[in-house]
Amino acid sequence: MKKEFDFLVIGSGIAGLSYALKVAAHGKVAVVSKAELKETNTAYAQGGISSVTYKPDSFEKHIEDTLIAGDGLCKDEAVKKVVSEAPEQIRQLLEWGTRFDKTEDGQFDLHREGGHSEHRILHHKDNTGAEIQRALIEQIRSHKNITVMEHHFAVEIITQHHLGKNTEPWMQDIECYGAYVLDKKTRQIDTVLAKTTMMATGGVGSVYQTTTNPLIATGDGIAMVFRARGIIENMEFVQFHPTSLFNLSVRPSFLITEAMRGYGGILRRQDGEEFMYEYDERGCLAPRDIVARAIDNELKQRGDDFVYLDVTHKDSEETIKHFPNIYKRCLSIGIDITKDMIPVVPAAHYLCGGIRVDLNGRSSIQRLYAAGECASTGLHGANRLASNSLIEALVFADSAAKDAVGSLDKIQHNQRIPEWNDDGTVNPEEMILITQSNKEVEQIMSKYVGIVRSNIRLNRALGRLEVLYKETEALFQKSKVSQKICELRNKINVAYLIIKSAKKRKESRGLHYNIDYLQKLDF
Ligand code: FAD
Ligand code: SIN
Image (spheres, rainbow, N blue to C red):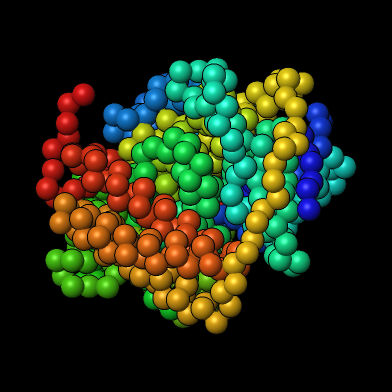
């Protein structure tokens, strides 16, 4: 079935929903989400959202902290943009009904996290993302111009080559007209046509065995744009969060927020000894790549499964007040964080690279925008500063919304788009192949393309992945389209992009650490 909208938004996290709310005053909007609206990385965010709020903090300090974390690869204009536009986007979130914690004197209760020189993280207890998601969903559901398509899976974007139409030198002669979208209830594939399309499909954590990301984070948007020949960049920079709860049987891994180290939490070996000062003078508040590598090294050297995060020296009431959800979750498995140390391990958490966009959120494919975790804006460079991603998503979704609204009158729908041709026949019993291949991708990535890399591991990963790629493409060609086979295919594409980018970088920088090239290159 063909459906027509002015704006198509793929993804219902902070990037997709904030963009949808901003364009909705100007035309008909479809928000497509492969699960329920609320099942997003956004809803899992704990620590908070960074913005300069009070003195002595300043834009200069936030810019400086972001650049230091980014290790020489941030784009200055993107950093300045996000930092200086952040307060206005926070005001907008408040207007949409988001609540942030305040102190008794009515000021925002600001947290501090690793790499930040000031307290500048606005938060709602220890579940900031869920609060933001709640407020956005309430606004979205009540907007008459927005059609919500939950349990709809975007399979491919619809693109065609158009010679001579590019407006910028780095843009390609390709235009996007919407997407083919699988309605999971009817199993039909709709042709959703739009004048502009926003890709806001989030992260890629699910390509790894241990991740803080929910199952939806399979990198679909990045894979779709890659297959459509759009520019993807900086894929080697996968951020591992140093502290997820050690609990092998649970996926995703439950995050123990970095704010807990800002609050005074101490990382200890299993014998109780503090170790972070042996790695960095900032101790437990060093940027998270350094902390994650330090923990990885401790585990490998000692053969331990986890290290401890300790807040038992802090006031119990304060701990429970600041971290009620972490307290409850740990208690449910017998750990009282006011008395017991928390066993933690690093987990794949965030992708710094993705679909290349300019300062207006435009991808290299015309009429296609990207924002949020699937986009590479230049803000994070080689390493993201904690709590900079929610604000990045808001700022770039805002700029993309302005650009898309501004170009609306000049764009016509393309009516000559064929419907999806699904003549696959393979039956669901082949699911076993998909399940097994998924496990293999995750194992390859965790074993060979994790926190510490080497040339031999990367080559082995690529060789193993190529086998899976061929098998999966063959299966895809003869299968009826399903979310499972598409997600597997997307994960393989994303894994390929991470490995290829990692192989290309002949240095160690930021999140990319290769023991065969320990130095940074001058450039
Ligand atoms: P998401 O919120 O992940 O939304 C993606 C959407 O795309 C979902 O609706 C999904 O269903 C949809 N989708 C994906 N593929 C398809 C498809 N093929 N078809 C249809 N729909 C699709 N950042 C901070 O700044 N501060 C924090 O404190 C913080 N804490 C975090 C804690 C955890 C545990 C995690 C996992 C992340 C955290 N982050 C934090 C990172 C931040 O939450 C994410 O980067 C951000 O929320 C991403 O938002 P998004 O809108 O880009 O994507
Ligand atoms: C956390 O709360 O530690 C996560 C913050 C982030 O990923 O930005």
